[in-house]
Image (cartoon, rainbow, N blue to C red; front, side, top):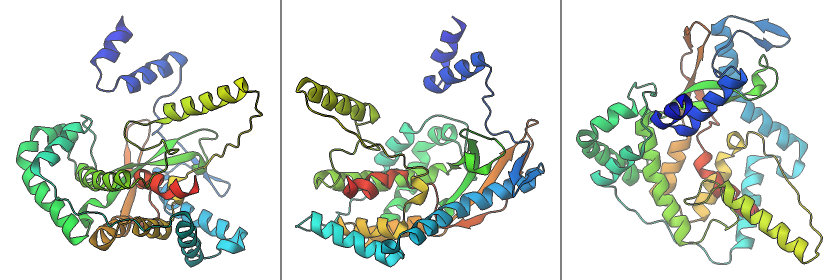
Length: 329
């Protein structure tokens, strides 16, 4: 009965459920605490040095991996070759060009609806504005936000002030002293999330109306999820077994896939699919000149925060992964 009460009274029932399960299993639920990490065979316990090590790792490992991939395959040895190969493949796949995306301005009502859908929480980005606070004053801020959003869409320039992300290393599995076993959790400002939602909505309308995303893509799509993919796969296997047909499967694990999205290839694909003019300029602006800082806690809740550092490949591209990967299916 006590567990039922906790789950029913929580804002996120699934998160609360897993907290209770981990508590019963005796697992440490706080993956933000740090005591030490191993760097070049040396154990580091100073929080400032640990934060610096994580920040350096998160800002450099996508570039390092990309360089290794290019070095191991002479056919894609440069970014320009990657772009040329992508353009050649896209032109072979599609005979007709796609129409340009249509400009569609926002309204104060749309901004209010987006704010209303934000998960209610006290957590916030570097600007210290929480969703709980924003929802209380949505009526007063929706109009100025609407004006700024429309200026962003019209000029193709994403505001620099909301390109800042606070990074928390989140432990996945394996040795806790190894920085490679952590993934970066980006804490963005709510204003950035609102702007991103406005842009994403217009992009998805364009992609859906022109049948650009392949039907086999289930992730990051409205009313579709991995359950649908599992059902489709199971159904295909059962049909094959019923018809006494041989079955085979190839499963690929794309580790840290979001962090390896090549910006130039992504922008090339956007332009090919009709995201041109100021809209294309806006996506380029969104991806460029981003900054992050790493935040750590220890068991005594002491906080260590590093200064801002520029990143070339961030973890903010999940919403474009379906478009990036669509022509490979």
